[in-house]
Figure: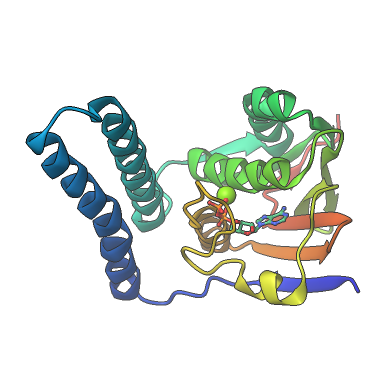
Length: 227
Ligand code: ADP
Ligand code: MG
């Protein structure tokens, strides 16, 4: 059965978020401390411990990076730009990841759609959502980005032929730290939805287990330039 849902950001207070961040960062730090103690006793497994320490610190670092993006104050650098150009940039940026995983990445973008917002924040949101689509898709599958307009809204649709989500999984999208990946932070979608809502936009998900997922990002347009 096809599942559809419009996601809204689920965390309301920064306080709640701060509490969970503190918790999430403390875990890797505790692990690191334990390994350092062991390394102080003897040097037998130094190399192995070093590897684990680096990986735990890396995780703490990604959580903090994502959190800073999340907690960043409102849209700062407002500029006017063509949405298709930004999407092209993001697709290019993610090409190596897609290629590495054997996923075909394609786009069909309507030119002349201008929006006015914080370009780098929007880029961050697009990267997160496209990255998820690529990560959900097995080798041989594809991710397609389609941009079109209707009335004065821009619709960016990211369609993947990945594993999809059931109703329960879909209902958790947008909840901080919800992740099904070993190396996931569970902050990507929450951050993206928050950014897009700040831009007076909306994010909707449609998904079907085994078939794939379609994420639609709707943003208000400033103007349309037809040639
Ligand atoms: P992370 O990518 O670090 O796990 P996200 O917040 O970006 O965190 O995503 C949360 C979870 O939502 C993912 O772990 C995955 O289970 C699910 N998800 C997000 N996008 C998709 C998608 N396109 N297809 C299938 N599952 C997805
Ligand atoms: Mg992600």
